[in-house]
Image 1 (tube, helix red, strand yellow):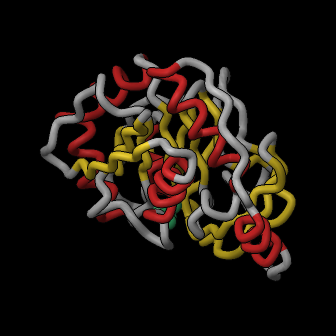
Image 2 (cartoon, rainbow, N blue to C red):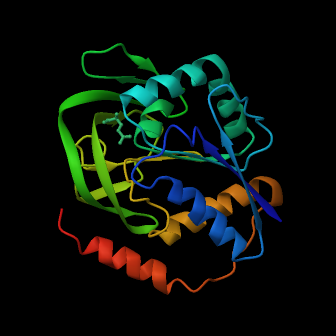
Length: 238
Ligand code: GLN
């Protein structure tokens, strides 16, 4: 078996260790005898919608978001939507998460149209949320680090990834963090999120593999280091 991973705009949208999400998926596949294939899609490279099992889309500041959004509008947004129709899984973090919604309205700057894969919208606030985060989710207590001023609001038909136990999450007011919309996962958690939240990583991995191989039972791994990393992050102050 192989796992085809797309690091979407990896040279552009990659802050606070987001590339670690690609490494975590690749390693947890490899440790189970599944061969990971990682390709970076840069602006201007067309996505083959039938090829990838999982897309990892990292964060970036507004400047990078404009570049990524332009490519999504002109070339790859529709291709990404078709890939998701074909069962691909997406993990989008922060700036990437904002771009998969309906729109992102930056502070005093033109609105950025989103891909519309997630029924959500984001408006820049005048406060920056910076600090460690803990989220109660179906995949255990997720730990991560947030740094954003965008406030994201979820619409009908989507679920939050979880409930904020520490930190601000989507908007600092409704207690939600992230989103699950079919096979699309969005979150504000960097750090990166996947290496120290292995239950979420394996959920995404299983879902991605099921696209071409059907439901498979993932073999158990020794998760001592992942659990240790998680627990150290969870014990950090805000
Ligand atoms: N520019 C966005 C914000 O601050 C995204 C930041 C990020 O990806 N860390 O809301």
